[in-house]
Image (cartoon, rainbow, N blue to C red):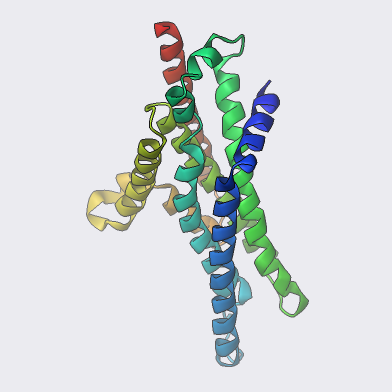
Length: 246
């Protein structure tokens, strides 16, 4: 049932111009950033040749590209998740969905999987850019895979937060604004030194920084799993409350 719901949502996303437009804009922007990073690396390559333990193409091209991709995910995720349940509530089809013999968890995970797959498509297309440099440069595949893993987990966490917020309102744009505000708030908290280590630790982007350096920590992986599980659990509970009211 989860796969059936995910396939339905996937078709719905790509039958509308929204998903195509977001993918095109994201990839166009990231491709432009990638070309700028490659150009800068070519300029610096002569200076780096004489340095010991000089940063390579992975550090100077792939890592900054993945960091820019994280910001792209922060921008496009609210637009992809805003319709998941808000549109159902606005169109008054959520009541029919909740009355169907389908578990609440199946509905949540199905819709969640559809959005995560779209975001992972962005991650995969982004990773192809630095991989294209293997023809004439040497990449650190350990760091590259760690960065891809971090970006995929970050996308999954963003999607879970957006899905939960879409259950709270019948207005998709309100859900999008709330999701963007929450995710941006996490980033602002991370940047503010006065908020302390505890609040900074709660930011998904702080845990992403370590993975960009190639440091795969079990604590970071557990954080992303708990972050996603928390918002998915809140979404399930919210829909269960709506089902009981009806």
